[in-house]
Amino acid sequence: MSTHKSRTTRTLGAVAVVSVALALTACANRSDVAATGDVFPSKTITFLTPTSAGGATDLTARTLAKELEDEFGVSVVVENRPGGAGSVGIQYLAGTAADGYTIAVLPVEVSLLGHQGYDIDPADFDFIAQANSQPGSIAVPVDSPFQTLDELIVAAEADPGSISISNAGPGSIWNLGATDLGLAAGVEFTHVPFDGGAPAVTAAVGGQVNAVVAGIGETAPAQKDGRLRVLAVLTDDRVPALPDVPTATELGFDVVIGSWAAIGAPAGVPTDVVATLEAALKNAIAAPAYVEFIESGGNIPFFRSAADTTAFVQTESERFASLLAGS
Image 1 (cartoon, helix red, strand yellow):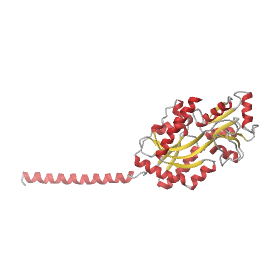
Image 2 (cartoon, rainbow, N blue to C red):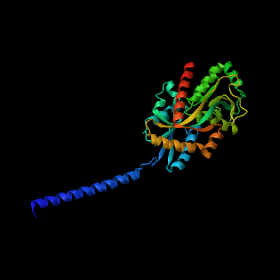
Image 3 (tube, rainbow, N blue to C red):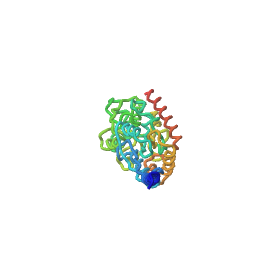
Image 4 (cartoon, helix red, strand yellow):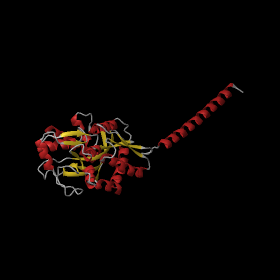
């Protein structure tokens, strides 16, 4: 065999080997795409809640997670990260991958805590939807000697600091609500912080404190089953879940404050993934099981789009900055 022919044979053989290798690589790449999925979502979604288990925020996440599982056909796992009036979980979310596989219920505190020294800025998140609104309330143990808000205030006037009020912790919306009520009434309360509304309500039910300021999603069911007595709602108008309970304004105390739940992710999620999550959440928020859950606690279920939720959170942040400056 000539040297030229030998070199040609070797060259053709090398080309064939390279071609086979490229073909195998292409097949492997296609297998990787099939395994990981090129359409969102293709794996488990983590649904964070920055509160303890059992409260309104936690149950909101769990109810929506079930609906999202039905929508997407993948597991949606709820993970509790309580602490610091919600700051622990909110800050944790900001540091996760912006791929849509970690989302969270972002309560009203996301627009409040940054004005109170926490390293939290609404700009660090992509807001996907707003899911509900929750009016505030003040309640006492069912066997409390205080039958009305006026009686509670009179006791606080007579002995400053003697009336203890549990809430969701420093920086929380319910801590601000309790503070505002004290300012409006001209009295001094002793604030007892807890990591979330659920343990704060439990403390009141157990008689550890004189009263609790929390959302009606937590106090209305406790009144219904005879564990708490709601003295007032912190809204402009009475709420359907507690039609016989007066507003604080009716009683002469100008305090109107409430919570809400947005669904968010760390900033930078691809726009198509945000759109997919937004569409799924719109269906989940309209689902009968979710509507029934929200309304059973006297709260208001409704869907607000990603763009509208982003604008709403900014407005709330500005409102709270002004409110805190005035307090």
